[in-house]
Structure formats: C-alpha cells, structure tokens
Length: 386
Ligand SMILES: [Zn+2]
Image (cartoon, rainbow, N blue to C red; front, side):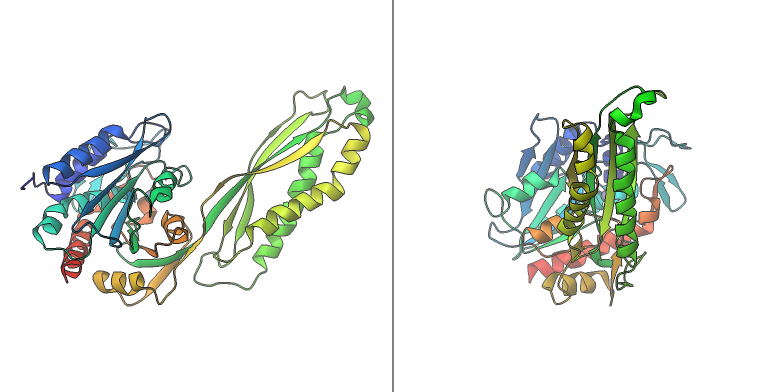
C-alpha cells in the first residue's frame, strides 16, 4: 500500500496546527495520525482517557511478534497564554533554518520525523517491529502515558526497548531526575485574633513543616554529589502556598505544595515519612490539645520516577550507534522514560531540538535537527531489517 508522502516539515506544519495544549483535546491530532498510518496500511490502537476526550496511540510496523523498539513521544504542548509570540504559535513559520511554532522542539518535531519515516520503515522487510507510541498529558506530570503502559504485555506488546524523542539535540540521555510532588493541608481552628490562645493557627504550623522541609533540603544538598546532574544533588522546594481568611482571624486553613527533584536511587518514601514524623511529634500534639478537629494531611499528588538505564543495556549501545555519539548524558528535566523503564522496557531519551527552546515564546527547532533525526530513523530502519 502506498500512502501519502509528506516531507518532515509538511508533517510538522500539520501537527503544529492542532492546538493540543494539555487542557484541550488531542483527538483531532490523533485521528490525523491514525488516518495517515491507515493510508500506509498500519492499524492503530487508541487508548482513550476516562471521558474520551483524549487518547494515546499505539501502532506497530513490521512483524507482529513480541519485543521490538518503540518510538515514544507526547502529543500535548504547554500553554502559550501570557507569552509574547512574534508569529502565530499554531502556524509553522520558517525563518532561515529555524521553524517556529508551539511544540516544534517539545516534541512535535520528533513526531513529524517518526511519521515521515513511516514510508521508509514500510519499504523494508523489518525483522524487528517498530512501534509508534504517542501519548497525551505528558506536560502535566506524564499522566496520559500511564494507562497505555499498563496495557503493555497485555493488550499491547511490550517493547524490548524504547526511544523517547524529547529534545536532546540528538544526543543520548540515559538518566534524568524525577519530580515528585506533594500537597500538604493544615487544618487549624479559627477564632477572633484577639483570642489567639483559643485558636490553632494553620499558617504557623505550616511554617513549622516548611522549616523541617528546609532542613531536609539542606541535607539533600549535602549528599555525595552526582556530577552528571546540574545541580549535582536532589532539590526540594515549596512551590505553592495559600492560607488565612482575614487580618483579624486566626487562620483555619493553610495549604502548600512542595516538590523534590529526585536523583535515581533517592528514597522518596523516607522524605515523606520524615515530614509525617515531624508533624506527629512537633505539631499535632499541641494542635490537638487546643482543638481535636485540627489536623495535617500530606498527599503525594504526582510522581515522575527518576530515570537511569543500565549502561550495559542494548538500547544504550544501539542509540549511541544510530546517533553517531560515543557518550551518554544525564539531564535534569523529566520525561516518560522512567515510566517505560519501570515497566520493564529499557529506555533512552534521544530526539531533535534543544530543551532550551521548549516551553518558550517563539519556540523553534532547527531544520538541521530534523535532518539529523531523519538520518537516525534511516539507520534505525536498516538496523530493524537485519
Ligand atoms: Zn516534552
């Protein structure tokens, strides 16, 4: 079957034109991809979200057998709201070697390269299946890929390895940090501020908890540095806070969020356990003495696992060879690689474009990056044939 052939740039223009900001539907884009693949004789498996407004796509080129290599990317992009763009962010605009548009680097440029390589993959007598794995809601905490990963080894084949095409300038990334986020809610007792001794000040207790987090942060920073990362230690910070009602009321509620950017191997549970122990020992007894209805809840809201692949893994050697590199790198931004890795599919991150352009106004990708990625895909096709 001979489906339509578009250039990589044409495909990128089509993909950028779909406004797939994470809070919107990605279905028009996914249906476009499904249709494009169908025209090349490739069936897609869609894994929808609960209300059917978004979907991941899984498709296989080549033999229907276990294993294979997955090309993984997310379809969603970050918002443009509040950013000053010189061009329409949803219309691919070329200026010299630079192709501007939301998602060009992060990461529709990669999706375009994967799709533009489909005719090349189809032409070959592949011995190793090549899977196309496109997710949604990556930008809000790698949420959308999880139901699809849950199907690997069940309804969907489990890839032997995964190439995640987040922007690395086509270098090979074999480790990254993982952001883990918590929400803490302190419930106090409201009274008139002239009778403070009868109230429980939720903001004051939140302050104590934040003080403990600052001590933990200092300890994390003093750990044995891992100089592959910048900074070379796990970071911890309070990211959001709200509380209080009025300037003459002892505050009944305070909520704050904090985040740890974990290095591979960090004991995340130990951090939460320590904060709980501090609350149990240094906050709750006093709070309950005044008002039994008071309390502190600590809830993990999102965890993207830190990622590190065994340096001896087949996927590392393969990606280095295909990319023409001889060393791997570690980065501080997170991707879906850790989730695939934890699901038993060794992964690396390697994709076109520079993370420095991701999420910015006037986001762009160099056309030369797309060319490098296309050459990578050509070599991948050759490899999958042998
Ligand atoms: Zn991304």
